[in-house]
Length: 212
Image (cartoon, rainbow, N blue to C red; front, side):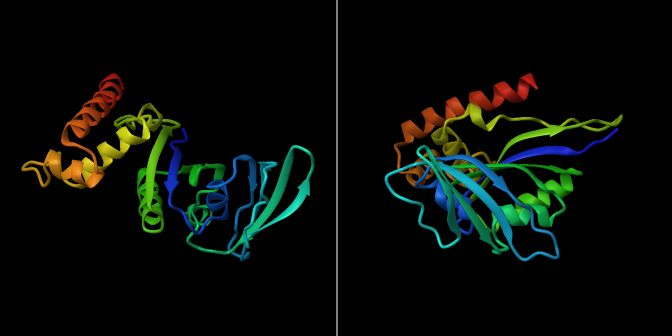
């Protein structure tokens, strides 16, 4: 039985990606993309945006079609740091890609957890942040441990930021490497607000873990 892992990742701060940069100022209605093979030097794709007051201005995208409701732009680039390029380099073709407000969401299948960890490590070295949104394993052999699924969409952006920052700064370690005040200062909020957000985020996290 196949045991691949279907992965959905959100990548933030992918400044080298034309899709990400265009989505910061325009709403992308649909997107088609090509994959780069070892013999090719560029990734080619097309994205559709609703007609806006201003045209898309990008050195990597050219308008190829327009009507009363939409404009279609074709983009090409050969930047090896772009997530759209990096994921296929690990033998994992991108199955789905969309972007909103500068954030990329990519779906792909990895053969195992080790490959997944390699992809995430690679992307984190090239982008501001990478979040696992969804993991689905196609099958389990006897003795395998099931993957724990935590739905990122259950958290608000602020709740997730509080949880992620507290973890990064060592708030949950024993002994603590950071106090509530330290994390609150990093987030530029009061300690009481930090504790409130953290409590809600932890409750949502535990609800998913304990019900898994």
